[in-house]
Image 1 (cartoon, one colour):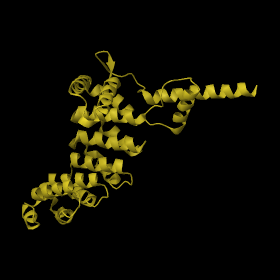
Image 2 (tube, helix red, strand yellow):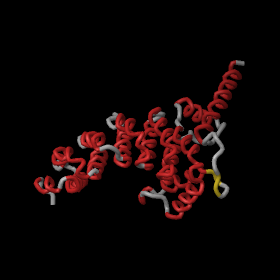
Image 3 (cartoon, helix red, strand yellow):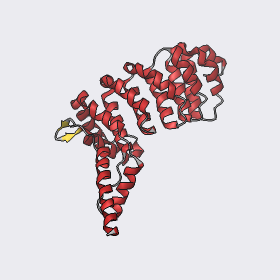
Length: 272
């Protein structure tokens, strides 16, 4: 009797967690379809192809072209699906329940990977670019809710893909530009360089980022400052100091930024 009771509890747990797993794996609402395939399937194919060709840093050209065409044909009708995917997150309980189901041979499906859904959503926003500007308020909300460091960082990337129309996100991005976790911090800094905004607001934040422990953040900040031209003159002393950085690639970015911002100061610092 006790054994039967335990089995019943396990089955109930698996059923509940299976429902949660399904919610993470696929968007809830009806998705737009192109050529018989839902948007999330197109994006999953792109991501899977990219993952297996990581040395090329992009999906194969044929897969990339098909996905780009599908996303553009679906257009802004796909934004609700992309937002749902960007909100995806895995709970520890769901993960454990799925593992238990596999151990009991009740399912062969691996635990859901919300991070993959997040990445696929960001790919969609990348392909839509500025056309996704109507999603900015929802993206800021997702970013602020911080479902996970991956969701937040990828929401920042999506905002950066949209560019200047995403300026309402600047206060949130500035707040997280010093986040202790490198993933959202790096992407928040990058998004700020793409969205742009008032130099008086962004230049100090990017100047501070030149002292970040992450090389990626420092490099992104240097490139971003160069984009402001002479409006970033207040960053010149910090850039000159950054010429002493041990990383060669960063020094190249810093030199280019100095030449864009203040050629005279660059020459005095020995930049040719």
